[in-house]
Image (cartoon, rainbow, N blue to C red):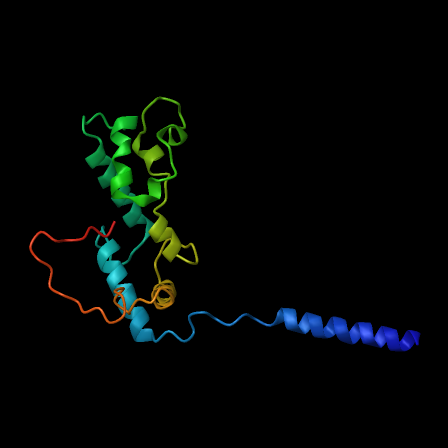
Length: 174
């Protein structure tokens, strides 16, 4: 009886270990490479601010510097809490960051380095491997997310036809 119990425990443990060691299926394995490549091109077109043909954290740094410059209405290279409020209309990444929380030196104003500590939520959510570069695999997750949301490969609701934009109807990707 003891021998049977030992064998049963060993077999059960072995099966459990085998089941746990199997790799989970790759969620983007069935995404056609052409769709992922198009998503990467589109993302890069919108995010490559420094012209290196890649979407990277360096582009986010440039974006933050440009945003900071637009918000700094008095040109003192510091953002008062009043100047800072406008960022919530431009970039949802800042919604949960109070001015006082970012003001780490307790000066009452934010400098560029304090302002830039807020990562861009869309970029961060797209950079799945957290390497600061949007890769073809990251782009495949964009396609997967669009599929799950009922969007077509171009990010529009399925069946919705594209139309030409009217003058002045541009969309700020940030």
